[in-house]
Image 1 (tube, one colour):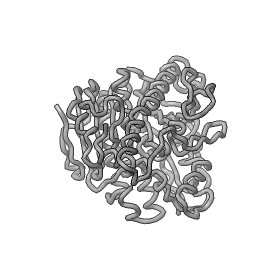
Image 2: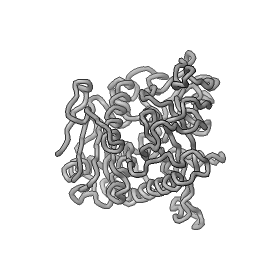
Image 3: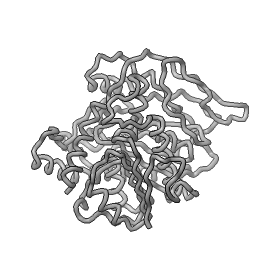
Image 4: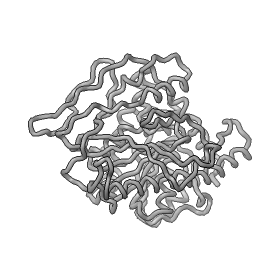
Length: 420
């Protein structure tokens, strides 16, 4: 089981997603027009957003970014969150990928209108309709995958429990811009809202009952046990998505992925409960070549059993506010492959998402430091992206990553260790 402090910390984190919806309103805006760059089609991204709009941090890689949303149904699995035994497990996956620099398409919305409505209502504030249209991304919809560099290594990403996959847009765009195809999974019923391409919107409705913050120890223990068991659903989601990508690499009905994916180079990563999923996925499926957990206490059958002796390289990226956590310490000590652990000063659990950037834009600095930390939000994004990118470049992409050699003077906020 989780150490009691870690269990209560995990409960706090899972309950915090509603508070993370502190977003204020701005008016609608037109999506930025398609841009083909210079005559050689070098890329996109030269446009500056209009006044009053928030541009999420720009990706730094050489590739422009494309995106596509897909609905997937696992006919082999039932849906435990519903009462109908005929219901099958349905997921939404958003692909982010290196795009053809000569392609054109509209910028993807940061949030759908339905997700914006959910955030506005869950925040409990009188926010304007359509505030989500004031947040500008960099990925364009419907653009072909780039030929240069294909086939590309693959990453699967999972959000935190109760959060949205959109909360990590800056990270997944960054990874795609550096030559990875990223499949960002919405774990239906365990995310704030799942919006399917046909317009269906499925709200949070997890089978795991989250107890009150002042719940007695026995309820916290029951919650921890339920989360240990429920991680299997998320792992099976990730394995199913990988199966679907494997099939699409051979023959994609949409024509996007055929011949474009290198399934010999696959990584899995996530934030919070998504990070716990990454560890458990590596334990259960050797198709995953490396894993990264961003500030997630670990759940799963091996909890309390001395940690996971994973053969794959694994990285534990932690917030300064992450408490003493036996699940982290035991797993780090037991990792059989290349092991990394880093802690970022002045950060809290949500520092590793886009939410501090969004909140700062609308509310100014120092909003909800218990959730967002006190580190400058743009700096938190830069650190998260740098260490995540270095890890996947080294252990999925097979490239040199000097940042992983040891502590870096470029990132004095990071306490870094590795073994062996």
